[in-house]
Image (cartoon, rainbow, N blue to C red; front, side, top):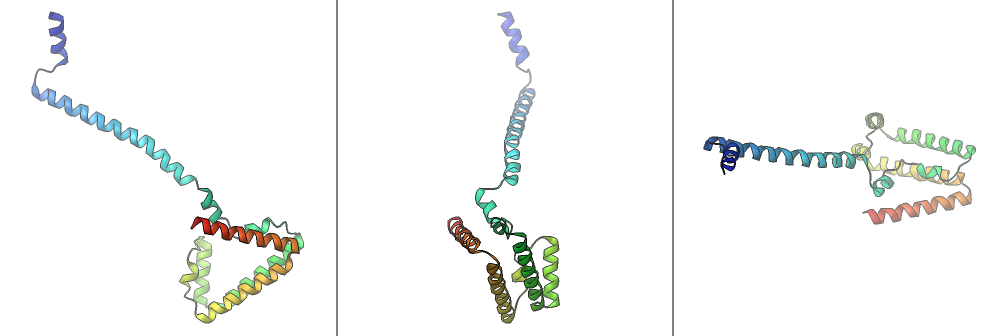
Length: 168
């Protein structure tokens, strides 16, 4: 019995202030442990969420022109398409004012091309000219392709359109 009284006296603080302080320390330790545990679980998930992409987002953000690689173009076709694209770029640049060209160049250098067309504030005449250049370029490029490549390109276009319909 004496042993039990001695153990109780060792475990139980003799002053009320010490008992309250002991409880506060236990609470702080519990809060700290919960905070560390939550952080240990949350931070790796946040980092991995930033590094991974969903299948739909990778489909949406494929670089433009990636479909052309699937067409297995000959070197001659690649050269013709490159010439057509350069010509279209030159013609498009001639439609723009010096200020609009500067905005386009700045966007190209920064890599942030999102919404740059809207920021150009194209006039109706400029929009019509750009549309005509795009249509002409598309027709020229299509003429470079073989009938089988044209069919494959059309199938890829339909696939993109059906993917857009399911992701929106």
